[in-house]
Amino acid sequence: TAPAQLRNFSIIAHIDHGKSTLADRMLQITGVVDQRAMRAQYLDRMDIERERGITIKSQAVRMPWAVDGVQHALNMIDTPGHVDFTYEVSRSLAACEGAVLLVDASQGIEAQTLANLYLAMEGDLEIVPVLNKIDLPAAQPEKYAEELAGLVGCDPADVLRVSGKTGEGVSELLDRIVARVPAPVGDPDAPARAMIFDSVYDTYRGVVTYVRVVDGRLEPRQKIAMMSTKATHELLEIGVSSPEPAPSKGLGVGEVGYLITGVKDVRQSRVGDTVTGAQRPATQDLGGYRDPKPMVFSGLFPIDGSEYPVLRDALDRLKLNDAALQYEPETSVALGFGFRVGFLGLLHLEIVRERLEREFDLDLIATAPSVVYEVRMDDGDVVTVTNPSEFPEGKVKEVREPVVKATVLAPSDFIGAVMELCQSRRGELQGMDYLSPERVELRYTLPLAEIVFDFFDQLKSRTRGYASLDYEPTGDQAADLVKVDVLLQGEKVDAFSAIVHKDKAYPYGLMMAGRLQKLIPRQQFEVPVQAAIGARVIARETVRAIRKDVLSKCYGGDITRKRKLLEKQKEGKKRMKMVGRVEVPQEAFIAALSSD
Ligand code: GDP
Ligand code: MG
Image 1: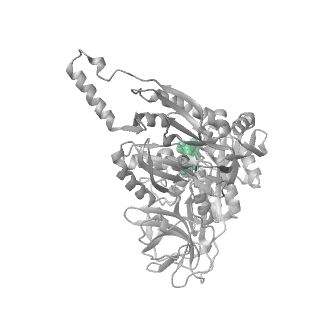
Image 2: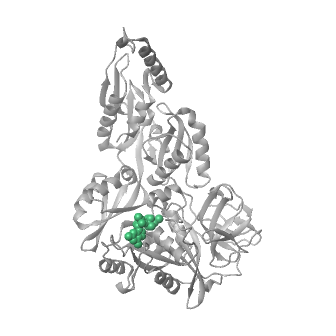
Image 3: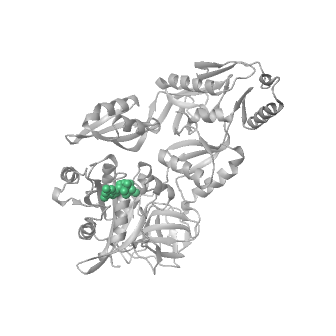
């Protein structure tokens, strides 16, 4: 297709505002998916995506659309809406000239509406403002058209009104996309340059890489090179998805499609990288390539220690499809053999954990998520700590922690509740704006560690579900942080060490000591459960001693009951962990880690 008849666009929206449903309707109306094959959220291919109703991996689809008798090809790029995947959103947007900004007509603008709009504006995209779900009785199209028009700077009458559910207004939207979104421009004679905006591992085809060609042309059998690594591959197949893959004779300026080279690991074909021809390579890449950087770390351990090799293989498999996943083996006194795993954020963690449990049938226990700390020692050493139990010994000069710029959107009635929460989490107010008399935007700087622990849940419950949150990392800052250890009879239990703010050390110590005291079975001797900062004990509980052995209560009882008890005890022994002299069933540790 000639560039003049091409349109590349994304749909951007706050989560649940109906992006995937609208995408479904577009597929249907343009005829690329027929009625019978249609299922809800056609493009959300992963089970977890469909169950949670969220989009994790971007997808691109080509759709034909005629306006005034002229055939056009529309490339729609679905983007993930969640903050953990902002980098993928920004790469998807870089492949487009326009963005449909979708807002739920019963909700109005939310935090990720803004975050995504800013990303689109940074990329100089043409914004097509659209209100969705106008079929809902609770829809207030007049009110929110005004809000949306104010935000993007257009006339409220120019805000389209659609329903992804019923299909109303969707053809008009497709016409509007052709009319308003600029056609791509590029140099067809220049050395080929194509930007990778998604890379997916497929069991049968290997890595499928989604690209947008900027200059030149890519053809099957051609040798290509990745500009970040200089690695070369042969193009085994190139084509477009509409939405099933259809091989083609090549992709030219402005076209969006997929390519297959036979690589087996998405890290060899990474989002943000530039593909060029190996024979006549471009000299300048398209920019924006960034190594994914894990922000949150957690220890993952199989509950059944014999499943360790299964966990290792499972992580290796997931890595093929997740360039951001990082892990290394970890051994814990309390939990045995496992892995220290780095994630982009909490949702990423949850998704990986769920996939491991579901797709590989593993039962896992995760240690409390931790951010990455930089510890500066008096002697000049700088240590990066991703695992609290590895906090360095010796004199610490300064501990630095990552901070984020957070945006909270809430009805103005809840300003007080939001401020109270942010302050209790060491937030600093940076600014506040009214989007309308009832709706306010609050900007805070907050330590990432404070967001990692139930911040979003708290925000939702304090605002009856009306507030939305978006955040992005903005560097790090020094803070009064200490490491709290939990000790059984003077021995550290590594999985419970935590790095917390000085003011929260005591409550944390008290809570953990209390929790373990209740869960640890009585031993032949008294066991002190302590929380300590260095050598200073800040909380103490005691597990009192028992004298009777397990059989004593069965004297005179029947023999089968006795045998059963012995077997049970043996069963239990297998899972016993020794902390110094103290014998603790692994279940106790697991329970202590999982209760809130
Ligand atoms: P996404 O997170 O932006 O991809 O949103 P989804 O497409 O998954 O939609 C979120 C929820 O809103 C789902 O329950 C949809 O069925 C519902 N929904 C989406 N579009 C419409 C619409 O136009 N009208 C109504 N009534 N519901 C919609
Ligand atoms: Mg979706």
